[in-house]
Length: 146
Image (cartoon, rainbow, N blue to C red):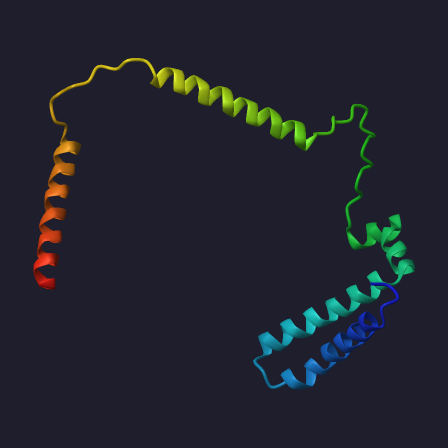
């Protein structure tokens, strides 16, 4: 948000509020006050460090890293083989084609003749009982309307 006057104003307001928090929280329990003081000091110092490129360069210096205990990050070797890019349209087209072939296969399997059993299964007995109860309820509703 470089060049935005509102961003600069908000940054300054945040800094002032961080400083004004101290007098307002002095009567709070010591643990909360200690937490807020350290948090605000850290936020202020972080904001000052990240807003100035020179300060950031100081943190990247090997001596400063060693003094602060910041570990050295090894350089990544350049990738010799790049990953191929994925074309979304072709991937969707391929997925759709696979779904169609799977649907055709399942349709051909279900079209095969199956042996029909005449005995009633427990689920059909339950379905018959539900239908009978629905008829009874409908009959009672008709009687109430009259």
